[in-house]
Length: 159
Image 1: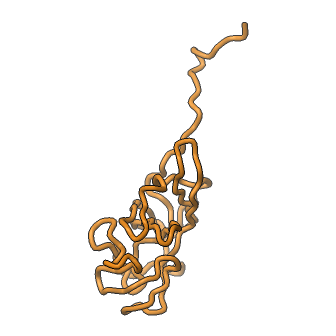
Image 2 (image 1 turned 120 degrees about the vertical axis):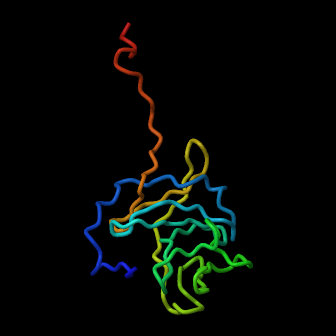
Image 3 (image 1 turned 180 degrees about the horizontal axis):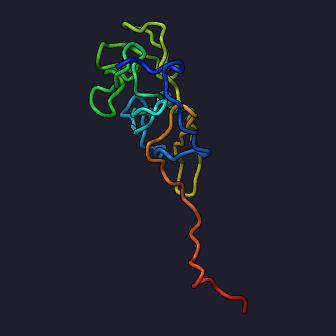
């Protein structure tokens, strides 16, 4: 498959206007398993992943800078054994988790495509949020909690 670039990409869907809840913050441990989500990259099926490194959450498109293939060894396993680098299972490219920069292997000098990620305090605890852009969007946006409202026929009346 040809790598997708802005020059070869189909027209992207508009980006969602709001941040999307990914997971509870404590679901990501330093150097541990990632949380993956299905996505569209320039309108084509892809996946993204979220990891924690040195206390900070990072998110990336799950596509090696060397070959446009998914990177995880098994689903969610991106860190190599020391927990200090992200590693592509296909050709062994090594990436810095905090920058996405390739520091070893066939893509040296390349970079993973970063996602905008935030951690926020919510009513249900600290959460990781993804702020999609126009080129990488969720396949099934996670619905945001809303304040439930009673149907019109049950609304209280003024007394």
